[in-house]
Amino acid sequence: MKSLPEITDKVKKNLIWKSVFRRDYRNTVRDRAQAVFGNVFLHLHPVQVRESAVKLRFTWGMGGITLLAFIILVITGVVLMFYYHPSIDQAYTDIKDLEFQVPFGVILRNLHRWGAHFMVIVVMIHMFRVFMTGSYKAPRQFNWGVGVILLVLTFLLSFTGYLTPWDQLGFWAITVGTNMGAATPLLGYQGPFSEYLHITPYNDVRFALLGGAQVGGNALLRSYIWHCVAIPLVATILMMVHFWRVRKDGGISKPQK
Amino acid sequence: MNPFIEIITQPDNIAIVIMVIMVCFYMVWAFQQAFQNDRLLAAGLPVDGENDRFVDTFKPLVRIELLVALVVMVGLTVWSILVDAPLEEIANPTLTPNPAKAPWYFLGLQELLVYFDPWLAGVVLPSLIVVGLIAIPYIDINPKGNGYYTFAERKYSIIIFSFGFFVLWLLLIVIGVFFRGPGWLWYWPWQEWDHSRVVFEPTKDLTAIIGIESRSFAGFIIGAVVVGSYLIGGMIAPYRYWKKNNPELLTQLGMIRYVTIIFLFITMMSIPIKMVLRLVFLIKYVWITPWFSV
Image 1 (spheres, rainbow over the protein chains, first blue to last red):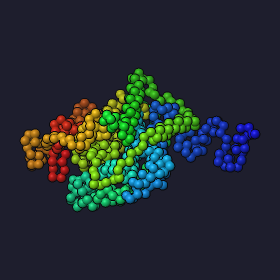
Image 2 (image 1 turned 45 degrees about the vertical axis):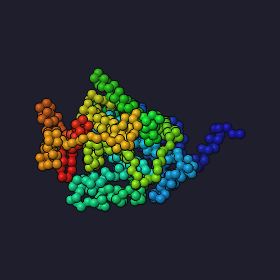
Image 3 (image 1 turned 180 degrees about the vertical axis):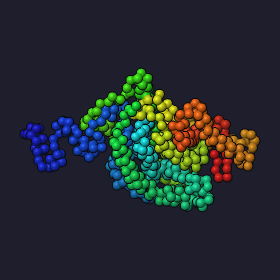
Image 4 (image 1 turned 120 degrees about the vertical axis):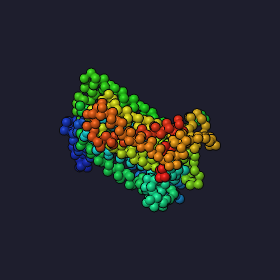
């Protein structure tokens, strides 16, 4: 029977362990810094932060929680994609399968659905916090704008996901939503001045959104691709810019008087 | 079951209840910190966070991030165990539900459809919300209140933003979720939804009050004058007020900023004005043109 230190010694003192973890952590100033900038996930942070960044009362952690919600949604979303066909013949029965056949399918879908509602809520509260602390003021004006676009993308991510189960709720929510597109001035067939551009239900904004004059198979495919590929791609790029600029603009905002 | 309990325990509406609780909580927390800092500012003391020391990211920050992540994940898991995501009947283009509601975060905009035509409520106003939000840092030239909670140093921007965020966005969402039933009619939470209920509201257009047909040429002219004087008067009145009382502010703002601020502000205020006109005076349109109506 070996003692615990002996076992740790065995685990740590070999080529494989050392190739992964370059050195032991000794809780020195150097190692605490190394832990942050030597790690691809943690190096988003500066090595040292101001006390307020560590206290919940200033930021409420809302931006980080939004990112966490996004990650949860990407993971559950990718798993859901394994069980789903974006066609009107199969979409609804695929969701039924999730409910009755797929192991843990119900909780998988629940996590994705409630995670999505949660993300919309926290991203709005994040915006409120940034406004209330005046953190959009110089030098952070541009990053506020990036944040507003990310807020809109969050709404659109949730909106495009509504149609995917192909049930009555999603079908009519998307019908109501995209009917607004038909009212676009100049470019929607019911909108003001559109008759001068010869806009009809078959060449207007709504047609472009749905891939047809009604919510059908093309609309399901389009919302699926927007939901799973296009918007997450754009949102990820903008998130990179958003986080990069948080650092470059001086980190969590501090009182400037 | 009690209709109120029924409506707030619908699986998708639980999210709205959670939103209301969270928003109220953080609103109180934000204003409490703002007033606390205001007292410090009044006494000439440093505000919260002004004399911060630096601490290591590893581990204080990483630890709290991990804890918050755990709490969130446990919370979402419990929520997902307790409440199942609904799945309604398969999509049926021939069977329109009544009411047909947009996703909950767009219900504020859907509520605006009661007061505005779709091109305004569904396209122009949402676009202006996005443009207006992005514009905030460029039109708010008050250098104070940067990086800390305060109310006293930036009263007007906070009041305007809070009105937009809490009343025009969140309150309208809550109304859309909990108070709108079949036919988009108003239902108190304790009222049963009645699909045969019809409310006859004899709405009229603004010019009909003085007996002029709104679709006539005279009605068109009067409507144009009313809308035009709202826009032009709204543009000029603050200018004249500030010119007299605070000319320095106008110089600091400059022409482009002034016009942007006032345009966004009078557009925003047109929403509550149109609501009062519609709800109290039963006025549907102020101005009817051959192309659009407002």
